[in-house]
Image (cartoon, rainbow, N blue to C red; front, side, top):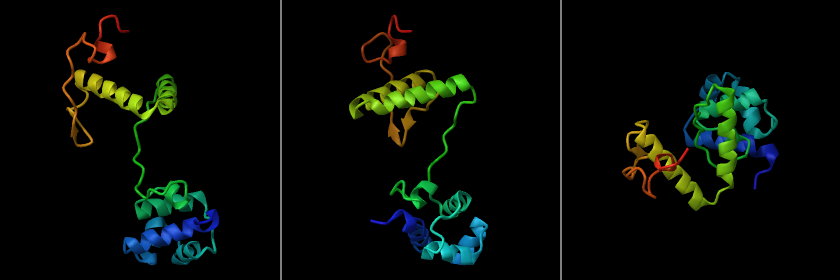
Length: 153
């Protein structure tokens, strides 16, 4: 297993070679010198500045988390919209914390409910991640999203 010291250089070189990117081209894209790219790859600069790691990640089409070894998934993270309203941000954070504590079956059920509610309100087109979302059940039935059930808040 790679140590924290050499993980950045190893992964930068791995992705650069895999994507057939010349060190000079990577340096230009990341707005650093070619020599700096080589120093990072060789381990001479194991503690690259965060801004440099971010630039390299963007130039290589990956995430900084991958370059520094926090994940083994080299796919870039996609930004998700964050509500501007502080109250909504706090509620979303609480939801994410509680969601993470659920077992996988309950997580799937919650997501089914959310997508059904969004579809019911016309916020989704009926497909998510390339899969067809089931039709929204009749309001008032046990299969309907909670928000559609009689007496639901």
